[in-house]
Image (cartoon, rainbow over all chains, first blue to last red; front, side, top):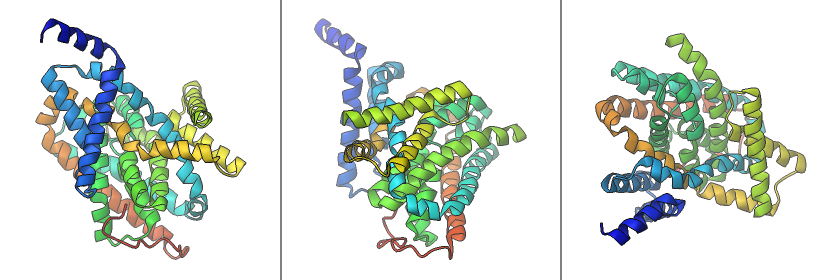
Length: 239
Length: 127
């Protein structure tokens, strides 16, 4: 790089502008491909954006810290978006009220299945203790999962990645599993996707059906609470 | 839009503050969601402005996961060493969780009510 270019680079990497723009451009490129592919769940825009940006960071030798200093403003909006999930939930209030018992039972079953099966399978395949703790909260929405992972002795930033992969897997293959099992009820479909694959599953559910989206958002919120309370207790029993 | 954003941020702030003050094992934004939900029930529904702002945030929910996901660059070594265990665990556990949750939900919902739009028109691309 010659001197003026280096100067431009130093300036850009010190302000959030470059990282923010990169995040938006990469995501929109991902979304463009997703639309081109007829919204095929495997052509996930988040995965494409992550791959593009990660590749660019590695090639340019830029640290994740530098990128995140700017991109944290996008990351920050996860909090307000979580709060906003109250809206689809409110619109479905009547349906939620009528299914309260089913919601509670499926929440407990799903929350425990998610953590126990993830840890059990990885343990059978000789994963390290750190990896197990990072995997355990993988079905919980990212900010909460990172907190749980840290409390269990895992790596929060690894958990963030595992959470996203889980979300993509659930959004991509969840509908196939539900079709195979002949689950046709939008409430059950949305709730199952939300428990297993949090916000990424929910954003997909919202695209397909308002009821499914509301139950998915509800499941994501409830599972964050249930896992935050239950997982540390279960963890102590085994480790 | 500004008013709606303020309401949402106030709910989150209240949630975070209470979590820090009481040590509740619940994430702040989730508590904030409970507050906003309670507010909507008391008030009898959201304003048009709040609906529009909230829906705009939720339409772009997937984008918000990108910065955390790029954190994968910090763990390429570990992912290389334990990639098989991690991948198998993620796939098995995610699909099993969806199956178990949906089965328990179907079983507990059964016969409780007939919901008019509970049957999707198209099975192939459901949520």
